[in-house]
Image 1 (cartoon, rainbow, N blue to C red):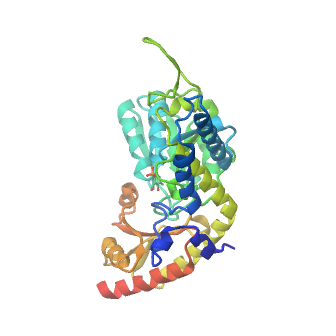
Image 2: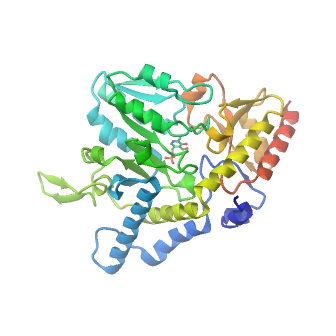
Image 3: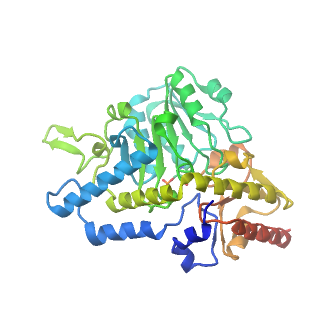
Length: 404
Ligand SMILES: Cc1ncc(COP(=O)(O)O)c(C=O)c1O
């Protein structure tokens, strides 16, 4: 069982805001002191550019950066650290795939499948690359639980499907999709599977070899690391065929007027000075999560979901968006309250120190396909308690009588 009070003490934000009930972890998580220290330490003790200088400080920074890459590779159970590209986050990683892989592998009439619950970051890059190449973007409809069923996938896959891009877990419905099964079906039809892991990686042990996905993208800031750092896993056989989409320093072997030879991957895909401090802090966040254990965090979140799902229904007029049971969702519940706009509700809650997100959560196609307006999302993590949810419920009940 998690010792939540001890965990909370590791996060300085709660010392500055002792009354804060933070339920917006799907947007970003807070950072433990060790992660903040890792950032500061890099600039105070190790600061130098990587893979460029031969002096000691630069070599030490390069070694630390390489070690951070290895930690990410181990965390994802990748075959090799060469399969890990550091990015700013999920958005940059997905755009990288669209431009460095999809653009040269799609032709007119080919098809790309995405789910109706995708975050705009896993929707817009595909829409744009389809418009450029003449490929067709098609939608997979999730069922009432928020799952892409095998029947739905089979019915949309054709011989023209080249890419299936799916969120491991939806940022609105919370539902965790059975990627292993999906990967098998996708590969049988000859397509590749791109996974947006932004909402899954903070909560689940991810093993990219076991899932057998071709790409896995995630952001550090949702899993206790700083903003501006994330990573993209790409299966080596695919990576070795990909061409860079950003060009500049640090990604070449040699440059002459008429010809350039790229460096080997992953450096080939990391043009310019990388976010070394961020990578080191991401590795520290991974160590911190491992030390607490993702398994215990998961058990804790399931209990919180069970409590919230059971009690939310006791407040009249509440309607859930996404019916998945606690065991099938990450750490979030989205809902509406009949007759009260989600923004009015979140305003009311904010005045009582509750931080929740209201709106479309960068997932407009989902709200369109479910024909609903803005929703409120409560998302929790390792430092949240049942008491936080009790405060939420008490304030929701008050808000309902205030606006009702
Ligand atoms: C499912 C999903 N995909 C992609 C993103 C984009 O992540 P980032 O803004 O860190 O690049 C988010 C962020 O909320 C998300 O929830």
